[in-house]
Image (cartoon, rainbow, N blue to C red; front, side, top):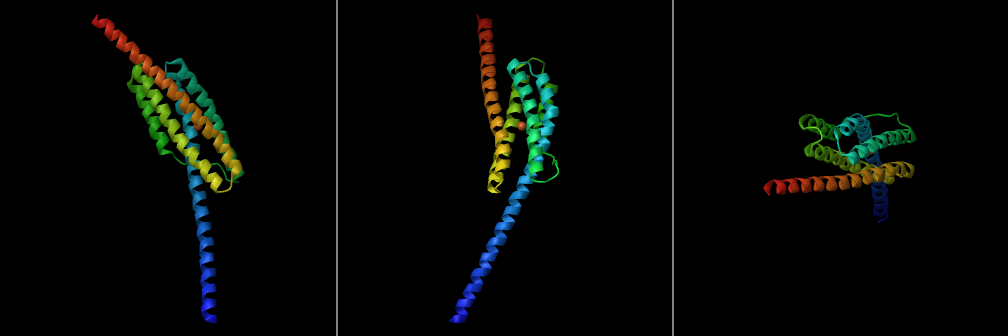
Length: 198
Ligand SMILES: [Fe+2]
C-alpha cells in the first residue's frame, strides 16, 4: 500500500514537471511567433515608406492624397515604435520579408501602370490597395498586441496597441473616402448617361 502511494506521488511529480516543461515550450513558441510577426511587420512598414509616396502621387482625389500622406508620416512612427519594441526586448532590429505586403504593393504598381491618370478606376484601385494594406496591418498588430499581453509584456502591448488604434482609425477614414467617392462618381455617371438619353 505504502509503495502504491509513493508510486502515485512519483507520478504526480512527473506530470507536474511535464506541465512546467510544456508551459515553458509553449511560452517559447509564442515568443517565436511574436518575433517572426514583429520582423515581418517591420519589413512591411519600411516597404510602405517606398510605396505610399507613389500611391499618393498617383491619386487625384484631394482627401485620398492627404490621407495617404498622413499615413506615410504614421508609417514612420510605426517603424520607430517597432524599433522601441526590439530595444525593450534587448534584441537587434531584424526584418523578415513580408510576402503579403509585397503582393499588395505589386498590385498598387500594376494599377498605377495600367490605368489612366485622374480616372475613377485608378482612384478606386488605390483606395482598394490602401484598404488591403490597412486590413493586413490591423490583423498583424491585433495579434502582436494579444501575444505581448500573453507574454506579460504590458509596455510592449501598449506601444503596439497605439499603432493598432491608428491603423483602425485610418481604415475607417478610407472606408468613408471610398464610399463617398465611388457613390459620387457613380451618381455623376448616371446623370450624364441620363442627359445623353434625353
Ligand atoms: Fe502602419
